[in-house]
Length: 75
Image (cartoon, rainbow, N blue to C red; front, side, top):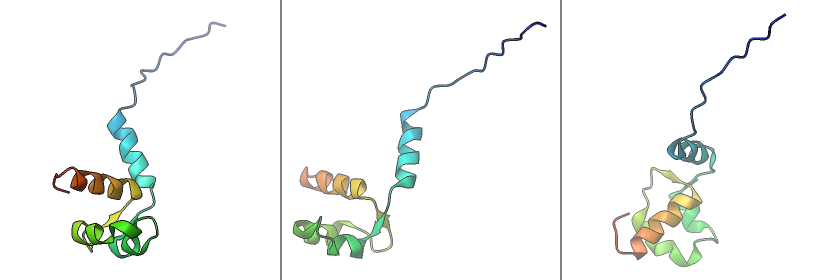
């Protein structure tokens, strides 16, 4: 009996695909929850101005928004 070797084409994982999966599985919070959280107790005014009432945000997204705000960019 002769064995047949099958080669499958394996494509590398793209970093943007990994980022999408990670973001999709991260826990998200409303603006109200974030403003009331202990994590952002000293940033409440900024969060109130920068975040949208109708959206949800992960901690990493909020941290990015705050960093961009501190650097003088638009959030």
